[in-house]
Length: 334
Image (tube, rainbow, N blue to C red; front, side, top):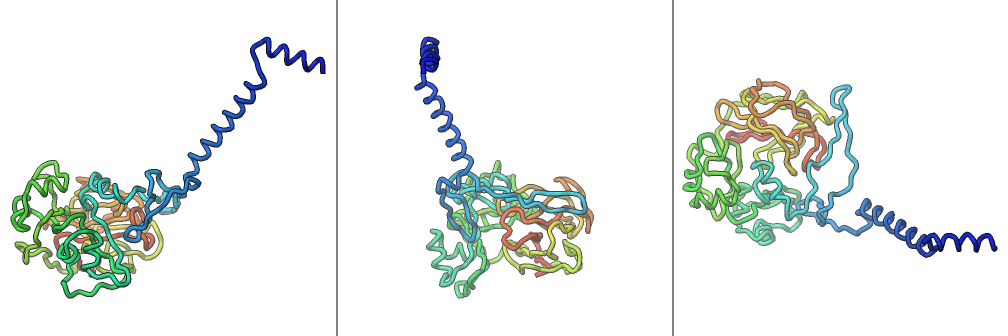
């Protein structure tokens, strides 16, 4: 005991105290617990919200999830994860910054039992006509449970830009102001629009007939199937003038349905990785949910050329497929 008391006495003379050791140990333990808490957001009780069939974290912290790995070809491994995990409030803004295929806060809503066009319009605070126009519905149309609807963030109309459209013409057709369209869609200038873009026309009125018609007919032989045989359709015609194709496996080849120039590539929270091709007649085709992209803007592509592989990036509740849209013409596979 005398030896121990002597050691303690020596430590005290050297400026050390047992209390100091205890304080240091407690601080170290608290730091460890703090780091563990930060790494495990599930323990914080973060809530979630289900909007239009999608689940979003109610906080800014991204949801924890393990990437899904898939082979493309025989020796290439890809990690397929959702491009963005965001709150509903900022989803539209981020989509708008990435590209203008889906303008700020355009959402997709899955019809529930008992829903009507009017009840949905009231739920989202827009006019009945806004719901009808954006989804090509009539006032007498009956909604089906599970049906997918496009919901605009404000009362107005949705316009798909066609070759040679100008913003001043579009404003005139929809009885709207050019400056309002520029501002709401965050355009750099009135000339910053491209064939295949979608524009929200705030407070616009849908014209009974657009000049030259909204969709021009094309012979079925103009396009080839965007995936290999047997070209299985997994979802029929839906927004926006789209057909989904998949033969089952992930990583299937995706082909250019016709020759043209790659207009845009990129990624959005809803569409995932995408390729847009503009064809000589001004029609644009869109290939979404790709696991990888094999081309770049400005590249010339031939009909049947490989442009990517099927995946489930973005909002893809039905598994790996390609979301194939035709903008400016009727979809021949409808």
